[in-house]
Amino acid sequence: MFYFITTWNFLLIPCYLIGTAVLNVLQADSFKRVSDRIIAAVWLGIVVLSIALLATSLVFPLNSWVGWCTAASLSLLSLTSQPTRDEITNLLFMVFPNLALGLLTLEFGVAAFTSRQVTWLDTGLYHYGAIRWLSEYGAVPGIALLIQQLGFTSSWFALAAPFNPPIFDAQVSAITNGFAFLLAIVHFLIALAQLFTNQAKLSDWFIVICSLILLPLLALSSLMSDILVSPSPDIPVILLTVIIAWAMLIIAHHRSSSVTQDESYSFKKKFKNKFYDPFIPLILAAGAVTIKLTCLPILLISVIFYSVFSKFCIKRLVIGAVITSLLLSPMFAVNIVTSGCPLFPSSFLCLDLPWSWTAEEAKAVAENTQVWGIWFDSAPPNIPPWLWLFGIWLINSSLNQIATVIILISIFLTISILRTSITHRLWSLMWVLGLAISGTVFLMLYAPVIRFGIGYLILIPGLYITIVFHKKIGNFNFLITKKIQPSKSWIIPPYFRITSYLALAVITLAIVLNQKMSYRLILPPQMMTSYLEKKQVNGINYLSPPDISPEDHELCWSAKLPCAFEIEDNIQLRDPNRGIKGGFIKVKREQGTGNRE
Image 1 (cartoon, rainbow, N blue to C red):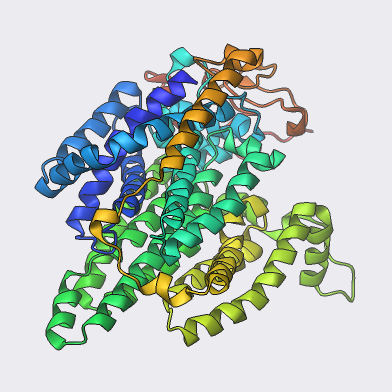
Image 2 (cartoon, rainbow, N blue to C red):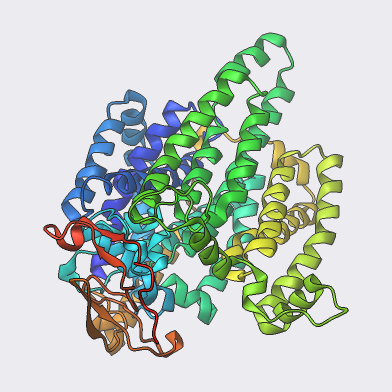
């Protein structure tokens, strides 16, 4: 637990510095409140740092020294900005005394919850393996030839790599998801404090409602809890979906309210020239795509959001396209290095490299993880294939049934939200609807795994409940349009501090009395292990799980590199003198090879 807490506190510093510099460069007037700026800055910092580390992996292995040097370099670059230095100085005096105790309390609680043994199967299959490859060797050519999932590049693994040195023996792989979960709770409590102090905006209500749906689901559901206590990119993707919707609400409302207050031409011209806030969802969305390709709908809506609020100005559109391309380019480059396909497992633009997957092979991998028909049998005659597949999918899991009910309810809720948006001229609600609808459609068409789409599915119910709460308390318009004095932009109620003292005492007592928890006071237990066999192909010595079902948990887990199920006989070391560090290539089989009489 202490390793988690210590690392989280050190990680907060560069993330906040980087994100604050980004906000100041963009002159993000929409995020004037201290609480909003903190959350936006930290998430921006996480995204930028993750992408920077992924780019660094093309040159250096992401060990602890390289990771912290990268973070320190970006932090020093951020501090060259005078507004950033001034803002940080003010924050230390305004927030730190009030926030320190509450943050420490939360860190103890989240660390106690997330420092359990990692048991999520995908971690044993490839998550931790990808992290180890990045940590020990960086981006290695052709590692997707060993296990196809190692070609699923994620900047979240790059962020985790420096914090998982070999000395800890696979004990701290859940550290990044724990950090994201901590931020989600902090955001919830900050928004809740705004409600209690009558300083709440629509965006605060939205975060409170979505958090009340999402946080218990992550903590109490056995499936999502297992994913949370792992390095899975599913967790940051879910949270970033909500964060981007929240950012769009803030920016869209700020734009509309500012224009309404002053209709003069000179004001509009000045406002148009300085309004750079739409970059924020665009940056977050591009970062989300580098974490997992299931975030493509978020990027689509963010691009449209940016284009609309840029008034389709050619100069702005070009700048946005350049920045988005720069943010995505490390993912493309690492994908090409590991699999030869920039959007692996998509076969789009696959290159002809010695380690490349062919377009047909990449397509087969994509179908194996995305397409409905691969999972289920063919439809009987006289029944539409889509109806047959949907019926089988529906009865296959209770989660699928719950998701279907949520989608059906959301269709009716969308009508009510549209009516409210038109009546009260709250066009910001439309962007949240766009995120939810595009993401849900993408989920159902290409990747009908509910854990991929939880962030999309909760947006419409969360937004509807937010509107209902506003109407019930009778001051819907007031809460949306009122001005908040800068001096009151950060207020923590006294009872929140009292609660922090009590919670810290309870958590400390629980740790002392719980023998199992006290064993992981410093470090979590090692992740699951399995029996592995030694094998060799073409001079490649590797470890392999027995040839049994993955459901029996016989996976690579924390095995020494390289680990694979079965390396084909046409896979060789790319440079035998460099060993596995030099990567792997695929040679053409001679005609007749493998034929038996």
